[in-house]
Image (tube, rainbow, N blue to C red; front, side):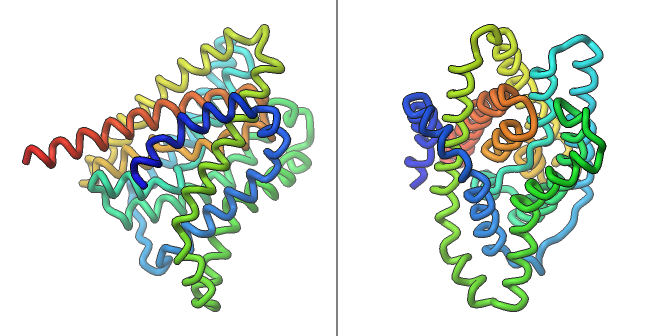
Length: 300
């Protein structure tokens, strides 16, 4: 299974490029895939055992401040809207639902990682609609006229799975146990969501990339810089709380399928290229971390 997982990203990129028109046609099912992924993930967690850490506060503060701060700074420096929106959605993008898998392989605390997976996703379900209401085409609308539709969709996709999982654990434990038993399906659903999202992004580049290559290059540069910053700063924060790995993964490992979906629907679709690049960089870094961890264990 681990060997298969290592091939998911290149396969998704290849199929996304070959089948980009079809991916764009079926991209409407991505929110349902993400909802199901989160529901299966949260159902497999005993919500009563979740714990809070001040580490979460610092990570949230970074995401909230750096996403809008980066957007505002780039706009002030004269950057175009696409590049600025790439920073906004890329930094604010929630932690990956599968973060516990790699984090625990590297020795992170499972309870810490799982707790922030829920808290971080709930945070984004509230903050993202607020931020998106003030950028791009939404800024021309009254706040509540733009906020409420976005909150309804983003909150439903990200926040509702948590409350559904909580309710099932409390009142229908057998149903919750049934869903938890099939949590392994999350990987395949994530792979499908990633394929459709990357394919949709590639299709948009084919249609509108001409004349925007400068923006696409800068989005790739931004993604690399922030991938380094977020993993590095996250590890530094984590070291202050005795869990370096958790800090790095929780801030650095992003749910890029979710981020691409949000960019395609609520911002300029080309901004999603940032997440496509980020997906590549974070997977390369995580693969290196796993290889290095295994090598160190073999030597010890």
